[in-house]
Length: 195
Image (tube, rainbow, N blue to C red; front, side, top):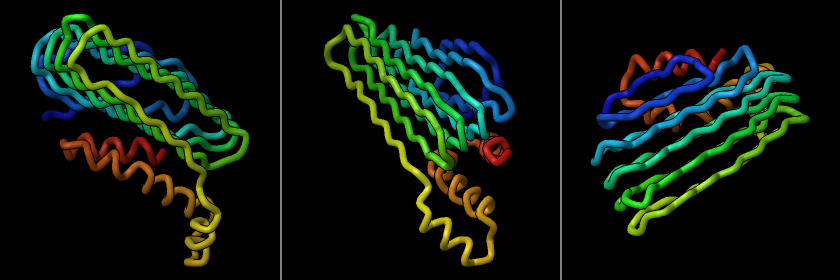
């Protein structure tokens, strides 16, 4: 499966023709609304959407991902990982749309949020519209706060609070970044989430 790093854009619409990982790093220096849609029009195509990033103090993101399955035997896994600093927010809508003739579709939404600061806001809305039989479609969402005991442990090893939190955030993203098959894309994503 090839990996493709998407440019930061407000609206992205793709009709995949081969197995691909689509990777999107959330803008770290601005607020914005983003729509990312994959329309499956070719049978047998398997894709993954990987969206990740950190919202700095006061920033917000509104993101909608859509996996629109129009033909049989397609699959899509959508992973959305976000870390929220003080007073930042995430409003995520994950859509799975399976047309009537798109049987044997497999689609999954996975949303994980790490809260670093205070006054954050996190909204997650999975929307599944399923018109076909013989499909698998599901979703999962978790939100967790950085544990003070973890920060304390790292600070006892000589790190500042900020350095300790950065290491914890890197660990949060690590499992998702490790899924990126292309080494160059993986390095660019690591750079993007550290900013």
